[in-house]
Length: 110
Length: 112
Image (tube, rainbow over all chains, first blue to last red):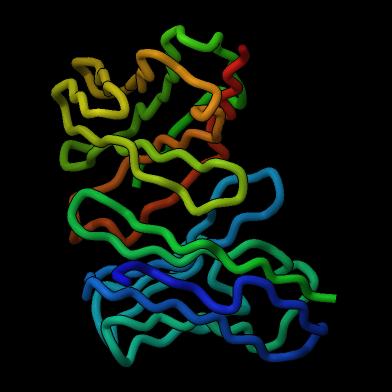
């Protein structure tokens, strides 16, 4: 099915571990984004990508790394997870007018 | 991107119009106003967008003031399923879309 999918949907990890959240879209949209949403708050932009091999920082990039070797994939890596990175992570892609969001990944760092 | 200001919460009676305001006094000439909503913990859903003219689609209407410093999203006949957090953001078209940021939005509660 066409769309944008995130995996895993839920993840529990320990402090200091490396964690990678996956995002895959089937439309070949150029722009892709990663947001985090803390409980009771809006979305904050972590990183975005304008095309394959082009990425840039958003509001809250510290502690995160992204890559975009293929247009359809935009993985987000937490190099050394901290408790403050416990959040719901949303991936999105944009085509002209609309942003399409994935279902989110709920990450808990213990 | 310009910042937006929205009231944290609003109530609306079922069947009545819901009018959600947004201030974006620092909007620049090439930035659009977009509205999204988020139901429970799902990913945000696009509703409508506009540049300077009022817009209407099957979901809602968007009224933008002449000076473009504020806008109002109108849900003409609110239903219980419209209970959600509504986000107003401003951003450039496509090539400037990379810095889309969301504030805390307005939590709309539609009551029977």
